[in-house]
Amino acid sequence: MQQAKAAEQQRRGGGGHLRQRLLGIASDLPVHKLQLAATPAAASLLPALAVAALLLLLAAARRAPASSFLDAYRSGVDIVSTPSTPPRGAAAAAAARVPRGCDIFRPGEWVPDDDAPYYTNLTCPLIQEHQNCMKYGRPDTGFLRWRWRPAGCELPRFDAAAFLDAVRDTSMAFVGDSLARNHMQSLMCLLSKVAYPKDISKTTHPEFRTMHYESHNFTVAIFWSPFLVRGYQPDPRRHMWDIHLDEPDAAWASGIAGFDRVVLSAANWFTRPAMFYESGRVVGCHYCLAPGVPDLTHRHSLRMAFRAALRVLVAGFNGTVIVRTLSPTSHFEGGAWDRGGDCRRTRPLTAGEVRMGGLDLDYHTAQVEEFARAKAEVEASGSGGRGPRLVLMDTTPAMVLRPDGHPSRYGHWAHENVTLYNDCVHWCLPGPIDAWNEMLLQMLLPDHPS
Ligand SMILES: *[C@@H]1O[C@H](CO)[C@@H](O)[C@H](O)[C@H]1NC(C)=O
Ligand SMILES: *[C@@H]1O[C@H](CO)[C@@H](O)[C@H](O)[C@H]1NC(C)=O
Ligand SMILES: *[C@@H]1O[C@H](CO)[C@@H](O)[C@H](O)[C@H]1NC(C)=O
Ligand SMILES: *[C@@H]1O[C@H](CO)[C@@H](O)[C@H](O)[C@H]1NC(C)=O
Image 1 (cartoon, helix red, strand yellow):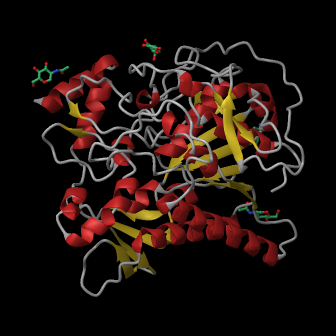
Image 2 (spheres, rainbow, N blue to C red):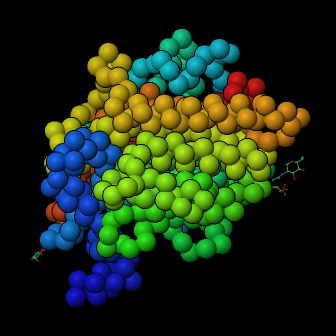
């Protein structure tokens, strides 16, 4: 009955869409978190899970809760059709750039910015529902009025014309989970000042979209791959994942040939209970409680997944690989994601108030180390300029300071008949994630020190 209604709403599009999506998603949500909580071993694990759970999760009322926040975001890129007449193109000017020697990532601070935001939900038609915080009633707008200032220099404002100029006749692939999509949608909103893309996807799969900016012959695509390596649920009722730590996920690995740039990211999905495989054999797990199987933890799987993904890129990719470090998992306050945790701050923290720690620090360390390892491999191979150019996009330090930038409970209508978890994982659009593209633009300019 509910399903029929949901299907009907989907056919009609419009207002019932989100509700329909929530219902549809809720039906395949695992419940392991609650089970874990019942055991002593799980208790020690809870803080990590909570964080990890990073992901929020929306579950239909009275249904089993989901195992992870991100489950709710498995579908729904929701790229709406855009007007066929592009906005008035701005003239390309030489992009402002940071002075040599300035680290745009750290240290730094968020400073007031009266010119923000770059766009609104009225000027950008590409904002995904869950991140359209203003639409869903977020009352405060102060969180929009900050910009990232690296210590020692100014990070130039995003310049859509300069960005499109820098990527003319090239292609860029985002690979990862719903935060990769969040990043790409921010980029498309920022670019909407100059041009709208056309959806040229070869598939109808909402998680694999390819968008083309005709005016600049720039192609941008998103590949869904939350573990970067092959990962799947052998039995969706069991809430366990099988993760093949040494097998890069074909969903992206076979699709990125020919792309000029790949933005690689992942983190939040690794917290799920999982069996780890190498060469097709079980080598360990994360919270499987299986006798004789060593619990290597999700810190291990995240590290090995990055290693495998980077290895295949070093061996067979000629473009630029941009490794984006994790978006913080630590912004739930007052409880875990599924225990009433929320993020209700309305302004950034200062570096004196918070430091990267816990799971964020562990994941970040693994990502930075695996990046360095891959870079050393490229250099050691002496392949005479072949192999990818590897660049680290270290967004974590800045974002740790922005617990105020998440949808919280404004990722959907408050009156919806769903059990609602607060989203302290994704970023409102517009919002602090727009700074990622200010950083990305700097990284695209010639002579960016990598
Ligand atoms: C945009 O946000 C406003 C509130 O600021 C809201 O009333 C409106 O419905 C939203 N529009 C769209 C298209 O999301
Ligand atoms: C458009 O860009 C692609 C790379 O993304 C390039 O291969 C192709 O030659 C370009 N087309 C034109 C007409 O320049
Ligand atoms: C990378 O470039 C080299 C030489 O320029 C070429 O032989 C090789 O086929 C390219 N590999 C890929 C995956 O494009
Ligand atoms: C929520 O559910 C109740 C009981 O099923 C129903 O009466 C009410 O109309 C629903 N509200 C919305 C907004 O769908």
